[in-house]
Each structure stands twice: as C-alpha cells, then as structure tokens.
Image (cartoon, rainbow over all chains, first blue to last red; front, side):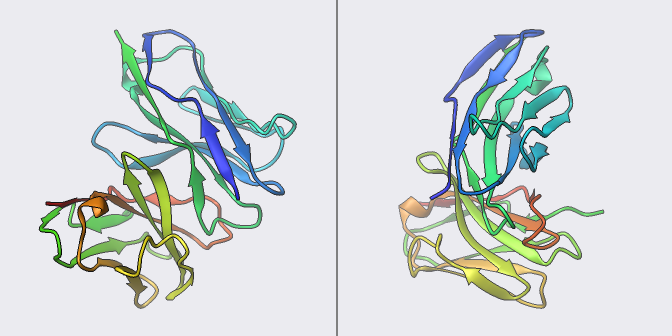
Length: 113
Length: 114
C-alpha cells in the first residue's frame, strides 16, 4: 500500500539556520504530495502542496519539489524563525482523488533564538 | 468563511462508556474525513464520506467504532464501550469533493479514557 517516510525528529535549530526535512513516498501512479504543519495547541494546516512531477510548492518561505525519479518531497526553508517551531507532516493523496491522506510520522522542529 | 469545527474540544470518559464526537465541515464541502492522531500510531485514517455515504470504512479499528453523516453536512463519530487505547485526538477534515485533493482540518477532539 501507499506509504510516507519522513525524517524522524526532533530537529533543533538556531534562528536563521537552513532547514531540510526529508520525505520519501511509495505509491502507484502519480499521487499529490503535501506538507501539513501543526503549531503548538493548534490544528493541522496545509503548508504547501504539489500535484505533479517537478512541481514546486511554496508558502511562508518554505519550498518542496515533487521529484518522481527519487520519490521525494523534501521540505526546505532558507532561514528559519522561532515562529516556525511546530510539527511538520508529509502526506500523499492517491492519484485521482483523496479518499484518504497517508501521513508520515511527523517531525518536530524547535527553533531557538 | 468558517472552517471545520469539532465538538467537544476535550472529552474525558470512563472505560466502558460510549462517546459521540461531532464534526461540522466547511459549508459546501461534500467530502468529510475522520482521522485519529495518537502518540504510538501517528495520524491514521478512519473513514470518509462522500455526501452521506461512507464508501471506505477500512480504517475503523473495531466494530465499536461507527460514524454517520446526515444531510450531507454534520458527521458524528461514535465509540462504544471505550477502552484506554481509544485515547487520542480525533481529527475531522473536509474537502470540496473526494476528487479535490486538499483537505482542511478541524482543531480536533482530545479523548481521554480513564
């Protein structure tokens, strides 16, 4: 079945550091790929998405590129802020619809001033 | 406009009791999803609805779990004879249709079974 594997945390960085959170997936066809973020005490929010190979999703300074050849969707940000501290989830929706999202285990990011 | 809402936000119950969790999707969204978030299992899919029909119930952990949706809007997840392992955050999401890949999540209901 479909699955998502993401880098286990926790990840601790200093403000303005570069962030990469790795995510790889297993799926048939061409799934849509997502990063969701969960800030402390809040619900899951969509951060960015990409629906086809080589698409780049971006939002709030975060980027991720859909790489079909490496089945990856790594999340990057050039300069993190304390306010980026949260849990980040990589997810996929099967090609043709989203009857369910398949999530990775989540990566907790803490950014220190 | 209003997002997905869930109630209650927190529920503490005793083992063996029944609980009902409610989800109000975004207005106009025909697809509704239930997930469970627990420490040991991460985020797990439970069930989804297209309109009032539930084509995929494969994620429901046992026959103690059931869900319904009425009027193509509000959904209720019911857990009968709760067990301690049911303790988790139950998340509801909605999307325009099941062919629309972006799901919008509610704040969740934290269930604690004593």
